[in-house]
Image 1 (tube, helix red, strand yellow):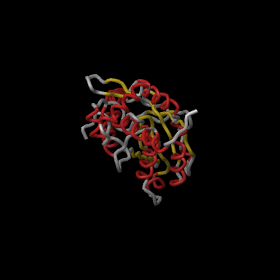
Image 2 (cartoon, helix red, strand yellow; image 1 turned 180 degrees about the horizontal axis):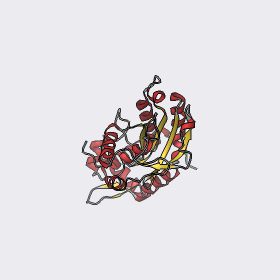
Image 3 (cartoon, one colour; image 1 turned 90 degrees about the vertical axis):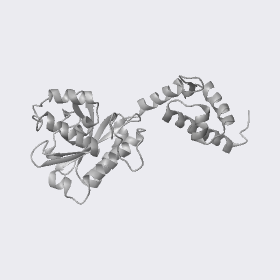
Length: 271
């Protein structure tokens, strides 16, 4: 049985490997020279390290001679990890913090076609006025969490929704027309948060923020909702607390958020 004589050296190798893999992941493909510039490691060490990573399938030859990209085995590992990440489980601590810090009903919603489905909620002060129970859904254009999701969806899905403007026998028609909703969605995408007033009924307000995965795709939204005066005039900043909670869940899912940012720019956005 072999002995480990230099554990620090082993950890150093792991750290170097992680740095190389992160650099390749960010760039897509890199030459050894480009890797040396990005990691600060000498080319001779990188050649040996890449040979090892290549042997275990974590990197492979790129599309051009001399280029290296992530290997299929590593991609499969990432996909397996992603499949194990349960959004409800990851978001629950932030949902609890939202409820505790605001006293309002806190929701976690995901998209199913043109509707937002509630997959978790914690009842707040005005629970009697909230009818979106676990498993129930509402149109994507209504309410803070649904609109936070729709604003960061693809342009194709947004236009599909705007062309149909699906009504709901319980929640009623979408307030305003397609142009008005498009303006609201643009504002939400720019601010990273949806603010709703009376979408569910007179005097009911809410704030919702999107949740993103590692690829920058929107996968759901967190929100708080209650009587308008309680949501917006209770001594806390509802936008700040909801944005912060959603950003924490996004980071747990591997989303890459810029320093000081709570949400990424919308995919395909010029801003």
